[in-house]
Length: 424
Image (cartoon, rainbow, N blue to C red; front, side, top):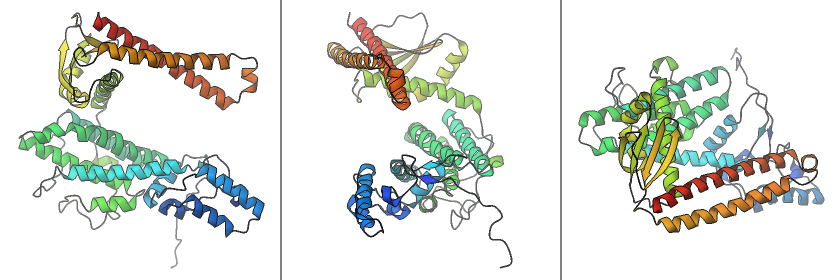
């Protein structure tokens, strides 16, 4: 046609197997993309070797390799998951050690996308038509936060594409959809839609639509099939509708000026509190149907301001019956104490919710088993010539396992102490 087909080409790294070996028929570690997309049994993988030009000895060796790597065959992952996985590996200067389990993980991510859109669509009434968001819109805390996180995702994707850092863009898309939108924002808006405040509901509907529409468009280059299907299901207006997501404009950083580092830091602190409460409720085996009372002590004004601002979010995410800020000198009985920082303590009222004697016994048994593990690891690491003879990866693994076990023993010891005080 009288012109060059491409002005720029991008050379990717060598794709190796999960162990870092070059793919070879004789090793039985060749991965056919079609087998990853459609799935294949171990038996059919073996049959492919018989049709090759390998001799009998090499075929048996290759079969053994396939059995080791794919004992249950290769699961069906689909085109979108495979493309996303390959792009997520693309850090400059490194080979791709392709692990099928990682590709399968992105197939589960596709399922999460599907369910998130299906869940979100329940919040859109038939007559809903999205309207453009205004910079001075009357937004609540979590609305401001999710728009800031969306702006970060758009900015990161654009920068990553400009610098040919595809893994940066995939990480931004994955984090926004999974950790920001699904795990946090969709949970935070449930109370809004349970209320009768039509004005708030309309604002949240517009924000939710903006997140879904923009989130699908930044993800589209990596997952064109599922994003197309989901894009067509959104309740578009005449302004936002395009015949296909493939010709919809890619979100530009300049249009998303909602970045707010202050609100992001505040929500990060609140998430730390929520995580601590959830972990404690799990450690003490508090029934999920039980809602505990939470009392928070703050020793400085800025922390107090953040907690006051996000009391409703803490109660919603941590499933608390109430969240109350108390004086730092107050003495509260029957509570587990969680130290969030030197300026913030959380007191969980557990008395009456759990069988203290029974829980102490459980924690002691768990602590005793971990103490045995610590002893065995220390004994193994103290043998003569350990540093010289043991491979580096094994030493690192033992070191990490020892630290985790010691930290867990310490945490269990603290939990047992709290329960014993409560029972006194």
